[in-house]
Length: 222
Image 1 (tube, rainbow, N blue to C red):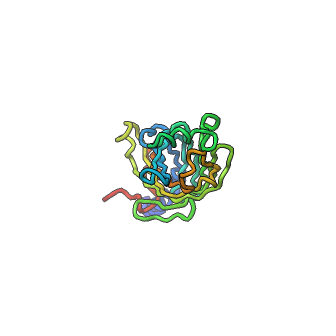
Image 2 (image 1 turned 45 degrees about the vertical axis):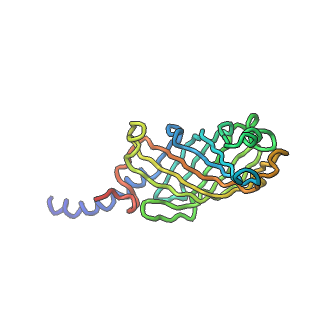
Image 3 (image 1 turned 90 degrees about the horizontal axis):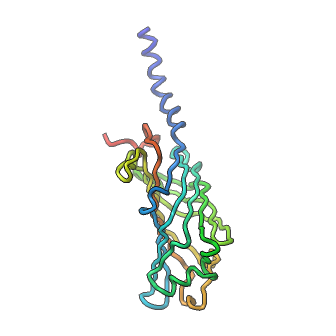
């Protein structure tokens, strides 16, 4: 019997991580509990003042179903409240919510449907990828591929809200065009440039802690 166990044990050790890893690979992360940490910063180039006006969207909700063994299987939906956008310049702050721009009274929600993470590469504990999906803003549906980084923090959720779970931190920095976004300048904003720089800072938590992580970059420190 001892000989049989000794022969079977190495096989189980090899197979078990693969089975449990597959079961744990798809993991749901919720952005909603961390709204105070989530924000989209928006930089506009202008021909007045300091030449730059910064805005921020502070109400960001949604879920992301992450796969770290197959990042291209990652999907999700991120919802942003257009009414929460605020700029540091009074005129832009007002006009940004009007019809030529966001028309936030009629279209209060901006969403990004994440379909996949593409062209991904691991660098230490960070996954770099292009977030491919569909942006819905006003009546427009726009296909986008945005460069992002994801950092996985195992067992770190308890430090933020006292609940057991893992965290992911999503960062991105990329330009968008107001013309492509169907955001046209009003008469008062004709001196605002077409390029919009977006800085993404998101945090989401899972409802469970992974027993182990599939990628060597996620190994716990020894």
